[in-house]
Length: 195
Length: 154
Image (cartoon, rainbow over all chains, first blue to last red):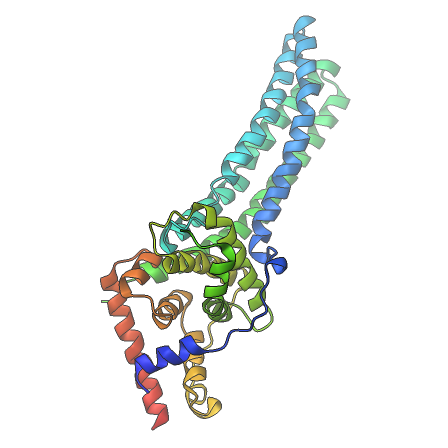
């Protein structure tokens, strides 16, 4: 049997007639990005809920001339406005199955999106934890003054912040790294032209 | 006129099933098939007719299949003499399937498209590499297959 016969045999092989449009449903392919979307949605809801609270606190502190309180409240408000935009911008890097893209371009775009998620997780202390922690500690201290309570509160906030950073940097980021390595492997396979 | 989704599905069902079977296990190839179909359905609006429909289908199907293979960690199985000969009784289709399973996902994609009748230019277009690179790889793949198959058959 020559190669053309082989191709004909292959193309004549049976295909079960089991697929109907009603059966369509996403599979585990989407799971990673579904998790990201869910995380982003929760973070966005929490952030948006905080905007009026700290926005009002900022306005009230400014109007009463409590400048340090107002500045820390403003820092928190800015952070909770910024977080949903940051999450959305990174999530939107995920490529759609664009038919104009070839497989190599799709893989590169997907790799860039996964790497961006890994960077986002590793840098969570900078764009997420630090602004809110500094804002919350400063806000509380400016209201309650420097005492044992505010020191205890600061310690709790720092511990929670470290825990959030650790979950992102050592829990979430390695998962993205693993996906990135598999993508890089596929890209290498496609790019390596045998001599 | 752009064909309807149902027409595309009907005329490409067998081809999509064959691709799905190569990138998923016996228990989840239907999941992959549905996923590929979903992506085709979602992307159909953006198909403007400039590309060949068959090439377009393969782009979407392979992008989906490769992502699926990554998620499910589908492993390649080294092909052995028994796979190529006695185990399948020399049935060319089974030999070919065993050979496909022994390849990495990219070489598998390339050989699949060749088997499905796409030209070298179309394969290069789908994967995003030069047709020269495809020619070199295909020559090697076919030689490897023929050598193993013929040796086993003798």
